[in-house]
Length: 222
View 1 (cartoon, rainbow, N blue to C red):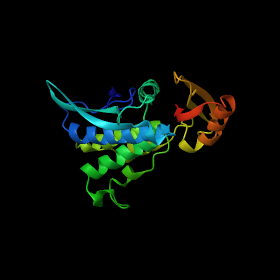
View 2: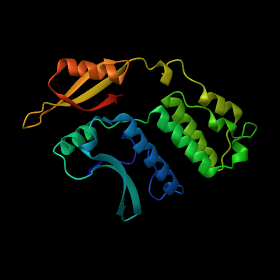
View 3: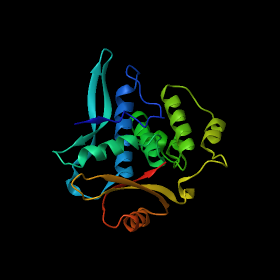
View 4: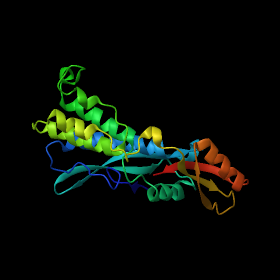
């Protein structure tokens, strides 16, 4: 059984089949998406056999790629957990994913000497600290890739943070979902939701509320 999760988070633009840079952009986006999914979903049992991987599909316009949830063998928990993942898949890139996409894009399409400290494109290595800023920077990188120029003022305006933009350091407490199994013959799953400053404290809350259940997976909600 395989469940398809798309090629990027559902609210993000993705590389289009037929575009000049589709192959490289799709490869980069798929890799960043799988990395983000692995950061998001944490499994507490090694025998669940759930993995994220790239899958190639085809249609009249050529091949394309998607990320899928795959099962390594059969486990009675694999299918229900995979549907939980499908329901709670991230809808947007996180800061780490956007930084990964930007760095892989510039290393693929630009010369190292232009990206050095004194190079004309050194701004492309500016650390990403918010999702909106990361999206703007990626748009600028792709604009330069087409041969169009960007001014210093345009770069400064797009890399500057709006006062209302939340940075990764300002995130504070997070919303967690802890998935537990009731250990019965039916193996009913419970999704325990809470806010906490860390996953460890979220799991402690879940165990305190459901002391006889087994923790199978936890993840954060955006």
